[in-house]
Each structure stands twice: as structure tokens, then as C-alpha cells.
Image (cartoon, rainbow, N blue to C red; front, side, top):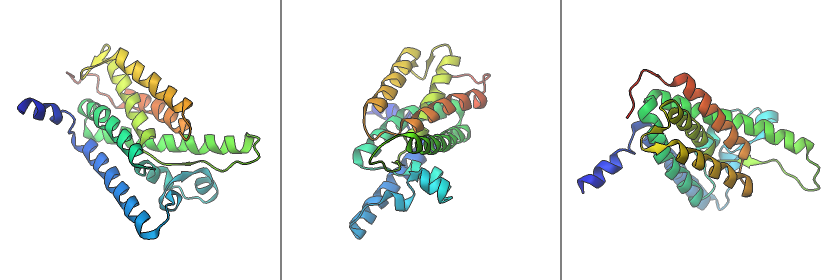
Length: 211
């Protein structure tokens, strides 16, 4: 029992747990609103869409979208990855820097998504096309993955029990799954991934000893 408790504790870092709890609470509120109103419109409660941001000047959506999720499997998968990857990054960067990495990665991912999807909408010939609406923490989570990739790289290929090989395979499979599945905002994923990597280069203290 003690070994199981110790195993679970390694994933319980303060900021990461608050982020996960916030997403879960907001998802429950979404479900309650759906039952009360009889209709579900993520756009009405902060989903990301380039028309709303660019034409409607609703810039707050670049933040709110990352705390909304489309369904139970969506939030479950995102939070499971965040629990593992986020806790590892927070332990190394520290809580404050981890929060900066997470939120800024999500913001950059949202901005990339807005401009990419606006460009695609205006340059893709299609009889029926509608502006893409995005929700989910995955842009920010990919930023966390990018940060972890840098941390493993700078720590000679191994960190917190995660090897460089496992990290590369994880990134490859994640990106591949995004590009081969429908309804995935790959622009946000790629934007978050690259920004997370770069931000970790800036935020990480090379003199800090890591396990």
C-alpha cells in the first residue's frame, strides 16, 4: 500500500493538479449547462474560432478554449497525458515556470490555430466549408511535451524515468495520430509543441540538479 501511495505521489504536483481539477470542474459545468438548456454550444462559452477572434475581436477565446472539452473521452485522454507529462515538467522547472510554460504554450497554440484555420478557410476551394471551432487542453499539453523533450535532451537523454527514445516515439505517434484522425486541430498541436520546446530552453536552470 505504501509503495502504491508513493507511486501516486510522484504525479501530484500542485500546479498541474490545479490545472487538471479546473478542467474537470469546467467540464462538469458544461454538462450541467447542457442538461439545463437542452442544447450544447461550445462556441457560446468560449471555444476558439478564427471568425470570433479576428472579426469579433473576442480575444479571450485564445485562453478559454484550452479549458473546454468536447466529450468525456476527450477530457479523459487529455488529463491522463497531462497528469504524467505535466508532473514531470513541473518537478524540473518548478511550479511557477511550469505554469508559464503551460499557459503560454496554450496561448501560442491558439494563435497559430486561429491564423492557420483562417488561411485554410480563405484559400481552400470547397462547396461546403465552415470555420473550424476548437476546444481542448491539447495545444498546451503539446507545449508541455515539447518542454519535456528539451529537458530530456539537455539532461543527456534521460529524465524522471523517461528516456529520449520513449519521448521521440511518443511525439511521433501523437503527431501522426493527429494528422490521420478527423476533427483534430493539428495547427494548435504543432504550435504548442514547438513553443513549449523553445520556452523550456529559456526557463530551465541548467545548474539545477535533476533526478
